[in-house]
Length: 67
Image (cartoon, rainbow, N blue to C red; front, side, top):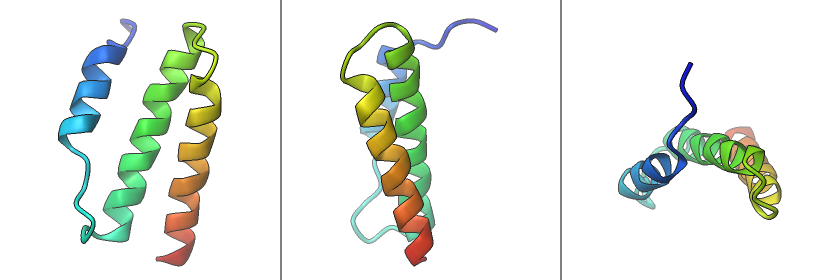
């Protein structure tokens, strides 16, 4: 499997960010996707990406717990 293109993934995230009134499950899925992209970035040595990925995973989990 080829390494992900993190810049392309970040661009896609930017373009697909859900609206404020989107269903909670859709918002949580977006945050989970963001976390995966940040995990990929952290694997390349980005110092802050791992922490941001953890925050995005936790935020998605909190959203799903409320839904």
